[in-house]
Length: 169
Image (cartoon, rainbow, N blue to C red; front, side):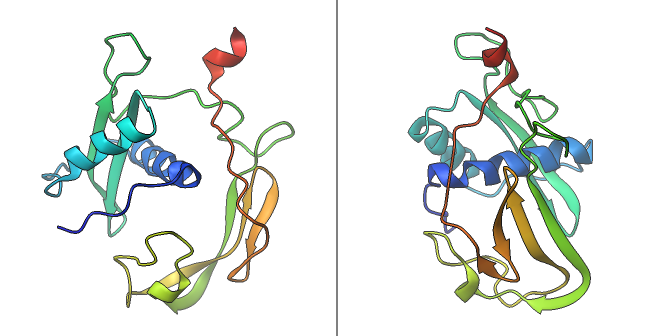
């Protein structure tokens, strides 16, 4: 099995997005994880000092695997499971004071995915050659336009994720 390179801090939101997709999808039809997945997730968690995360694998629009790894809070025994809500601040709604992460999609546009479009360190995608209907035409992160009509509009501007319990203290 080919494992993707260790994600950079800028790719952590992608991991969180996968977790969000898994939480929103409800109870998945579980399948066995790909060989080496658990070891890879634990390696990523150690590299980025992440105490816990939820991960979902989506195939053909269906959640086929949802797993929790690690603990909800550092130093506490409560484990993460696929239904864990992490309480990420300023996320989950489009309103004043929120980050406004969203993607605008042309639901009728057909495109064939290619490796040459990948703006990541990996430089490839397992979806190379797959034709899809529905295509992102614009993406906004923290209210800033970062991609429009296939072109990056701004350099990467990663920030740490803020959690609700840290804001209350």
